[in-house]
Image 1 (spheres, one colour):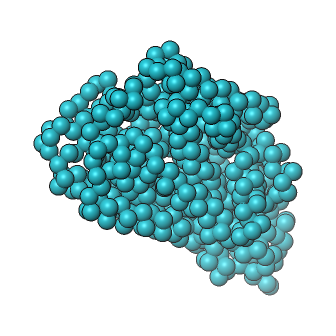
Image 2: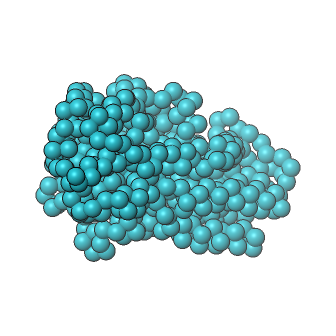
Length: 526
């Protein structure tokens, strides 16, 4: 979400980065980064994991049923509506459903250049483009059938609109109306959009009180009108939001501590499970701090201003307040923080990091720091190609070698069901523990409060469903905090009825969503 500021236009013009040209080395590095980043946004070998498969299954419902399905899922509907229309045009293969996010992620790149150029001139615009192109976080969610690439795009559009309205004296009512639509779209896409919206509201109020010019004061008021309009446009969904917040939540985890919040976020920016992601994330932290507090004076000297440099002071306030609000709400509601939620403030962090690179005034130092940063980011981006988000795709061919049409596959817990159904042959019967229903979607309402089913009784029902002539396969995991020990008990229950053979063991070191595959073979004919 955009920030505004109380500094005068003359103060912004004095920023040393604004007069620096883009040298040939920076230009070449940026072009290479942009090309690589675009390719990487459409390249991954992983199958769809739980959240992606759920998104596709919900999006494939008739348009009129999507909102009702999301009542049990916990998200607003805009991305699912867009994915529904996208699937009707391009199909529902893994590449097809992910390509919507890839397209949105590519559209964000020229906006990142424009945002950087407005803050620090052509040099910062070019560096921002390169950093955005290769950041592993953005590549990951550009290759995932989820809403986070859309969130990033909307944040950048809102940033540029507020910059127009407040800083550039372009407070036309059509821009205010467009801002209301864009922020409302963010709210209808992901609930964490509320926190940068609240942060921006406070910064705009501050700007209105402290603005250096009448034009900026008028712009701040009109931008606030746009935010109010966004809230009004979001009102129809509020009853569903209240139901979801009371009944769905995040049963898989609780809130994280502030230090962990920052560490996890920057590690994910640097590549997530990538082995060197913590180092890359730490490098980004340093660059962010240089961007917000640093000013390059000579080729060997960078001065720090603890009040933050004027050209990024308001953006820094919005980013910091967004993180404070988001973290506070996770504690107030005892809900989880997943680093993907950071999509609402990651664009600001990356603008800060790009600005940090430009704080190196010397040409050689700038090129070296920029090249090293892009190289480290590229390693995390390349890791995204080979990292498997779910093990179910690897289990499918193993099961296919042993399975026959009509065999039964049990997923324990049912959270493994959406990815399993997508990966396994269509002629198998897939059911999810603790029910005997096909787990294409997960009902998250009061999920953690549901009692476990007696494993022997459940095994008996599954064996009756399979009959004496069909094998039973079990895709299961020991890592789900909502089902500690239950899947192991279910394996034992099946084992008391039929001989068990584990075909594949779960591998949490190689897969984000890991699972074992066990077969309980039908007795041989007499």
